[in-house]
Length: 368
Ligand SMILES: Nc1nc2c(ncn2[C@@H]2O[C@H](COP(=O)(O)OP(=O)(O)OP(=O)(O)O)[C@@H](O)[C@H]2O)c(=O)[nH]1
Ligand SMILES: [Mg+2]
Image 1 (tube, rainbow, N blue to C red):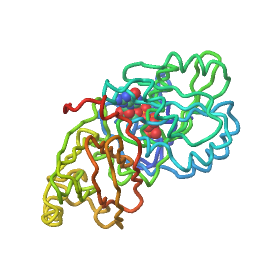
Image 2: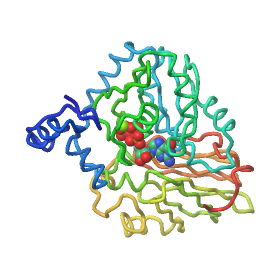
Image 3: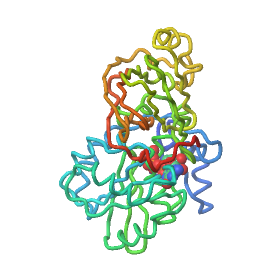
Image 4: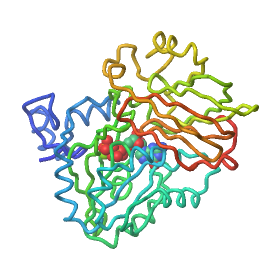
């Protein structure tokens, strides 16, 4: 039997492993005909905490094996983290499959960005064949769900896939009414879960854990702080020359430009992320002193893994209409340029220069 919230196999032996529920509680729930939830899902729902468990990497292999059993694969992307959710592993295993792309969380973009603009932007960014259709959705605003349901109604068996936290379970719940566990922590769903939407069987899956997103480097409580939930913060900066811009203690941008006027950029990220602008000469010292304090996340100064990682440097020349996206964190949108940014970041994290998702002339200049 599986936990109805996260799909983990129910077991009564080890509290530390997925699917644990004490035997007496389990027996009582069954005899009363009530929903069976593992302890982790129960606590996530009632106390807002997700206990860390080791997420099995076996699912990656399982996924490559099972994709052929489904008529359509529904690949869910998060519009606020395109670089993090358009994952190379998924591009690879889904390359030759008929697929439907769902771009979720569109409520988090500024209102000035139109649905058509988002769709055109996504289309330009997808470099993969056999896409049947692209749907833009927001489970928070119940946007695009009916259209998606109508398309999925053409199939008997579909599989939802994507990296962690993009909103797969939220979408499956919105489509089927199934009482799946949904939390702001990445890694909520732990096994395959089956749900019905009239004649269509929809399978929810555990999100893939990548190593290319900032969020993958942080523990659950801290992840929750940087994931944008109801709002994406947008802040405007107008740096002088030779300034260093920090996004938390997670990456650093050294800024230079040759123009007489100052460049302007906006930063989009979750609300728990702190930014800081300082003289490049003082940057090293500030980093040492304020890491995990003024510069959060990481959420504690002692966050062990982060500072001991290998870091890399990369330079980008950017101009108005371009953005610099940091997977699993957010992006910088250039409002006035040109400028050169030297990025320092943990080695495996994806950093990408891209055309602007939020058009600098239409996205507005005000802070929100
Ligand atoms: N703003 C916004 N938040 C959303 C939307 N859809 C889902 N979320 C939130 O995103 C978080 C993750 O949602 P889930 O449905 O658990 O995501 P998942 O892809 O199933 O995650 P895993 O099971 O960890 O792979 C939750 O806090 C949701 O409330 C949306 O359309 N807009
Ligand atoms: Mg899920």
